Amino acid sequence: MSTEKVDVLVIGAGPAGTVAASIVNKAGFKVKIVEKQKFPRFVIGESLLPRCMEALTEAGFVEALKEKGFQEKGGAKFVKNGKICDYFFADQFTAGWNWTWQVPRAEFDKTLADTVEQMGVPICYETAVTAITFNGSDSVTTVEDINGNKTDIEARFIIDGSGYGRVIPQLFNLDKPSNLAPRKALFVHTVDINRSMDEEPNRITIIVHKPGVWIWVIPFSSGVTSVGFVGDPDFFKQYEGSNEKVLRELIASQPYLDNRLKDVGFVFDPRILESWSTTTDQFYGDGFVLTGNVTEFLDPIFSSGVTLATVSSQKAANLVIRKLNGENVDWEQEYTKHLLQGVNTFRSYVMAWYEGTLDTIFFAEKQNHEVKKMICSVLAGYVWDMENPFVKNHHVALQKLARTIELEMLADEEI
Amino acid sequence: MDKLIGDLKEQIAVQLKLKNIKPEDIGDDEPLFGAGLGLDSLDVLELIVLLKQKYKLRVTNPEDGLKVFRSVRAMAEFITANRLQNT
Image 1: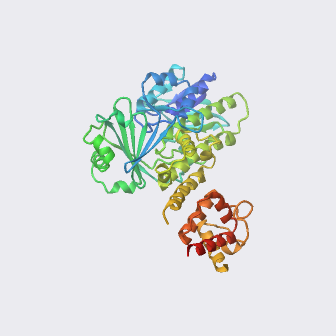
Image 2: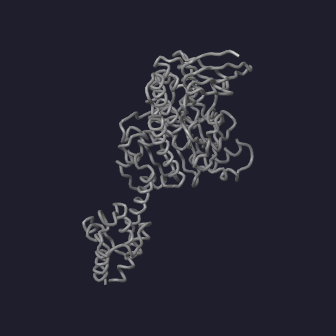
Image 3: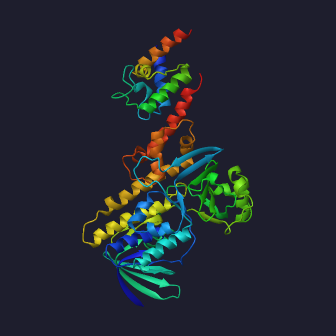
């Protein structure tokens, strides 16, 4: 078995891994990434939020991404029974980025990985972690490539950005169930030949299909559009047959989609993803930190996945640099608490979405512009701005607002 | 008037979903807002809707609201006065 030595071993070459690797590498440390799969590879999570642009900027990825000509995204559109609610990131409470991208992740992730390699961080693809031994904060990680060759990697620190792979939580039994109900998604990439500019490709469209069931429509600059139905697993039980048959039937049952996507080609056989919400007891330990989906993937509804992944990695990378420079780091305060502030804000919005509270707010007849800007900042991923009451009081602000809207409607009714 | 005050206390407790306060704990003249029960602007709306649904009375002017919702007794006086007016 061969042995090598690095300062920081990063597990996973997705956005979480590459952002962390780039930032630590720039600070002058020796970094290596191991990735179980071969890139490019398919993954969902195609709509980004403006807040992640800050992490991508610090990682030095924005120029390479701009060259790819991905679809720019300036907002989100919610649709319910023909009613429309628009959010534009340019019109938000927090001062920050007002646009981002919608990306086929195979190409996006490959771009980040190639860029970080060009910066001098080697990536070993098709290489899986089989064991990790810690000695204080130093560690020895055994990895195995596709040909069965094993290598021991000595590292001063490990950043685990393994996403659904959950490498460290599974090796050390740190997993625990999320408090979110299990949900299922059925999705495909469509050849969107009927797309018109009226459909405004520069944003995500979210369609409320049935209570608790919604649809994402994410146009890419290639002319392909990603479409997915998400809901309670029971909702899908009434449909029988192949994934393609079920998805075509669902599209036909939704007037907004039927017009546009009837009989269009599918780029691949529709896929299913379910029960994605798992979390863990601890986000860090002596010699390691977890970033991205490995901490907790909440739900696809607000496109928070890549943003939480890259922002947690940005934060973690900077703390790892301080730690390697011999400074003291209060991981509980500076990492876990900070990260949970953002995760729990999104969690409140995910719960309010499935409870119907956000329906009441999004589709209210009267819209308060100042309040709308505050909610827009959450939808833009600015979930650490404590000046925003809809961030600071996320657990009650939406309930209060929805109740106010209901009461105002009651108060306005004729006696 | 006493029956009306008693009814109102019950209705306020239900409408505002008061958890730690029983209807009989609300004083007749206790301020509903600020230092008293500590109700907020959302609760004002709840009370406006309560008056509308139970007593068919409209409070539209915010200054009226401040007077009307000063205490349970003030609410009862407002209801009594306006009921007389309406008949």
